[in-house]
Image (tube, rainbow, N blue to C red; front, side, top):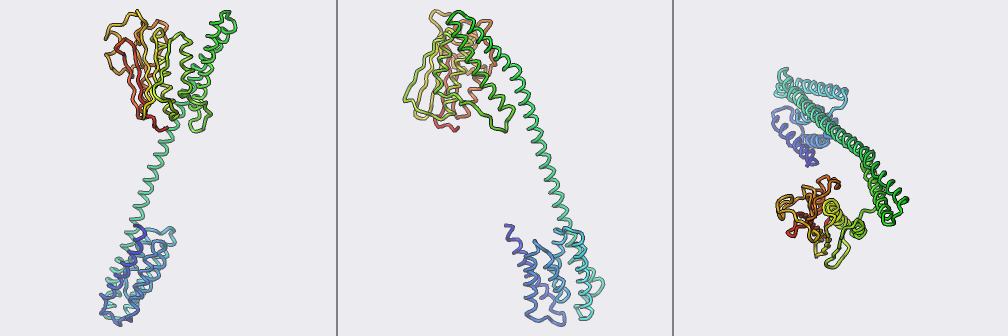
Length: 410
């Protein structure tokens, strides 16, 4: 669109030049017939080039205005000078050329006489022609130039403020990430390290083989937690730099997770339905996290309950269901006392209540919870286009069902 503007301007100047000379047919002596189209064509070509340099159009105007009273080139040149001059001496040079052009027009009008003298050489008309062909277009061009500069300055200021705002926000995020990393290192990493050290000491000093094995398992879990914690701290401290991360767990690591739960004395049974097949890493990782969070809730609230883990490999999705059953003879809590109504979604409560799974209420020394475990799982699953349901079962247990599209994007 912008490339067609110079061509249209050149054509307009060509046509208006012909019209301007045609309107002055009473001038004497009459110009040669071939001179007018040639001068109009030269003016149109110079106007087409005026966006890149206005000097050719100025020189053409300095010739055709005194000789033919062809004023359109002078008007266009004055406008372009006002909008695009870069140095003061350029503007002064143009004003000198324009003044000489008007003076030459007055001299030619005096020498020619007649209507030509009346139009271009009388003081009033000469002043009016100078104002109309040089003064007004130049002032209008200067106004346009000033307006563009003001708008450009406003845009630059807005862009600068936006960049500064982004930088301040990024700085605040970096400081907050660093603060969180310090807190995690000083508190969590320190406590986990103490746990690993005590587990190692217990493993060495214990004369009970079973206790030593349990201590060794606690130490392994603690060291794994420290490794994951170091990775998280690296991400928090260096958000823009790649941090070497260990492979994330998938369904191939699920049996190890179940074995760790069984080592705590909890009965866990895995059931695979359908033809098992490899899925995307994101799908398998999400399924692993669903099972992990569900088993964590079992550890907290229903350590004496039997837990079943079902993996259903369907045509277009993977279903992960974890539910537990209270041991036989256990007293079930009255419906509606501590558990939500059947089918209620308790994902925002972080999992089961004090008696999730139907077992006895959690002991006073039960593991603390953040209350956002299942809420985080819901967000993780829904990001892949799946659904998560969690709530008490009719048999007194508690169930979690996640449906994850098999073709979810990574």
